[in-house]
Length: 71
Image (cartoon, rainbow, N blue to C red; front, side):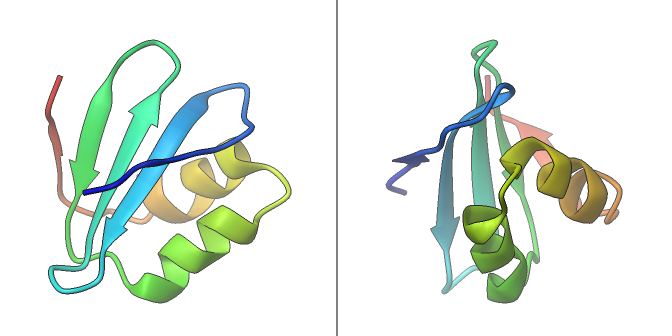
């Protein structure tokens, strides 16, 4: 999955696989997480948000998506 860099105080890069509805987020601290069953509209909202970190917190972290820490 290709990750795209984002300008954020918390997130480093974001990737999305529409076939599997899987979102990957790399944090500035080096952590890489994969979130499952994430609608493409959430990914697009994250990429368009004025604050990627706030959007992530409100719609993804608090959205209850299953996730796995990859590193």
